Length: 370
Ligand code: KG4
Ligand code: ZN
Image 1 (cartoon, rainbow, N blue to C red):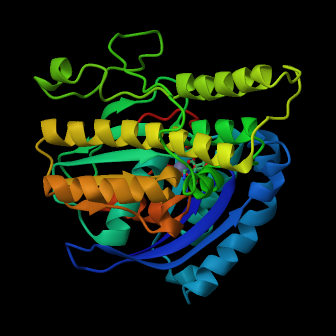
Image 2: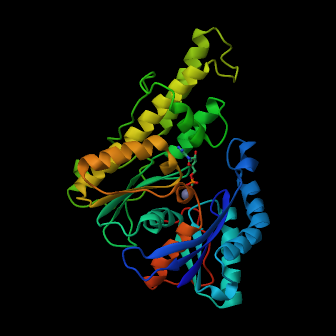
Image 3: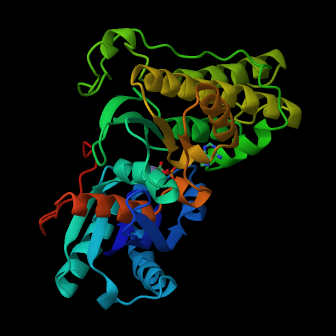
């Protein structure tokens, strides 16, 4: 089976062609993957502007689809199904991909399958590396999400915990903004942190020991797990961002600068120290919780997916920890870590093979549960 994937949930317009291989351990192979990034448009505003994003998806989608077919050396007649991101995401952006996918499904008489964006990120690991030994614990960490899942069987994703406020990538983006480093913040902080001292600044590592009003839906914690890991499968990054902001304000005051002056008072070396200290706290928090959940789950493998999984320290620290506990670590390639449509086609294939086909009233859902 050959599936066309379409992804437009945020600020990347993407299309890809993925084939089944017939090999159980490595079920899919990417034939093409095209991404039109809108970063240059949103950079000017310091973050994604939803209305601009939807309009740009409309401009880009046809060219992206054409190129995905050409790169895969296939035609419309060569496709067997269409998979599309249904949610979560920006509703105007999602609607562009959905409308195109439904139009294609009708015009070509193809089955249509709606895909959860985070299922796509999880299946990017399988597309890249083959099937994960189960049970697996997978962290999906991006600009919009920081969620921990347990997989007991293929295609079933049990949510163990997620962020109560900002996603980790969002914290990178906000800290970069307040240091004047531009958008998106992750890659630049990652680069600058390499020359900094990661203990230079004392930043807090948030512990969540009590329920609060951002608790979210009931979590699928296994028996015995809930009490042992209460709050330790969840994340919070807004306090860390505020701590960096407080540090900037204090330094400004200490140096007798106008507290309302938006410019920060730091040298390049001090910026590198802030980046390294911030990154140490984010990476340690993410990995402590992921590896703890894996240990309680008796996991046979660990995965990390999503835009932040491109982070060099997260990758190397995770690899070291995985070797220490003797578990295989699954990571996507850098191309598959940020939003793309190959992962949507792969997750679509998983759903199609499990017997799911969507009807033509499939609608965008900005906060679709998994
Ligand atoms: O998965 P993605 O493309 O979009 C969402 O679904 O959110 O992730 C984008 C996020 C941004 O917040 C960006 O700053 C972050 O991933 N990111 C990184 C790195 N590369 C991208 N964060 C940390 N280190 C990186 N190297
Ligand atoms: Zn994403």
